[in-house]
Amino acid sequence: MTHLADTETSRPEEAPQLPPPSRGYRLIRGMGWTLVWLGVLTLGFVAHQLWITTFFAKQNQAELVAELEDHFESAEITEIPYVPVFAPGEAPEPDDPSIVSGALGNLGTLRSEPPPEDGTAFAEIRIPSLDSLKDGWAVVEGVALGDLKNGAGHMPWTPLPGQPGNSVISGHRTTYGQPFHDLDQLKGGDRIEVETAAGLHVYAVRETHVVAPTAVWVTQPRSGAWLTLTTCNPKFSARERLVVVAELVEGPNAEVILGRI
Amino acid sequence: MRRIYRALPGSTPVKVITSIVIVSVALVALHFFYEWVGSSFLDTGGTVG
Image (cartoon, rainbow over the protein chains, first blue to last red):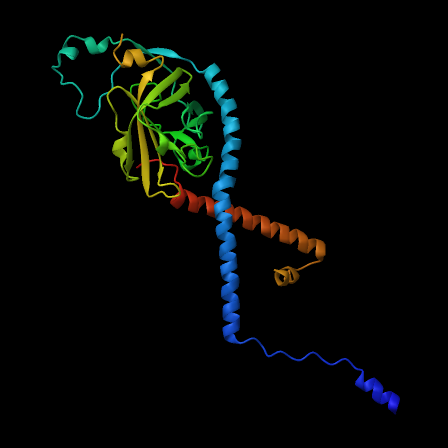
């Protein structure tokens, strides 16, 4: 009997039953997990935008630079008569002496290349004073989202760099390799180099603007030869656009366009 | 997570493969979602118009 009693008393005690979690407890636990997952997704978003987009853009850049070398070698360069481009309101009247005398019809010739196909690399932009662009960045034709995933794209309805008028290039500021990250650091007179199959075109910074994303006037034609760079502003926001306007000062077409010949 | 994994049908190898497929699809979907959010609100590429 004693033995049986001992056995009974040595049985492990059953774990005490916890009361089921209350509704408030479950609600707080659910909110906690929701916040944890939101935090994970937000951190994932930041990592994706800062590093993953840049990783893919740099991979694309390596391919585009190789494509660019082929393009420079194979592009057919032609000499075309220089036809000046005028800013809206600056075009000469039909009875202007320069038109009457035919002077505008004989202003020299420009080195020109055929228009690139959409999405293909056709130029390299370098800004020696900026870390993000001092080593050069391939520019593709087009400013669709897919084109800009490579970093920088040329607006197809504007002239090519080195040609008369206003050539516009847009680029990412904080993602996809952030080629235009430091564009706000450019000062008047800073040098911007754009190499195309037609040669190396050098521009000097003249103006900087912060405008609304809808300010299409920045893409309008200009008298002479200009390069307009546009990017998002401020950094990490698409609220505005930072616009840098530079004038052609050197290059195979500069002498003709600037009227030095 | 463990509960979801256990609820998957099939043997362990089938569960592992199913999990990998589900996670891969989720990551690809997340990548495109992040791209859309980033290109719409954070950095559109700087074009105007």
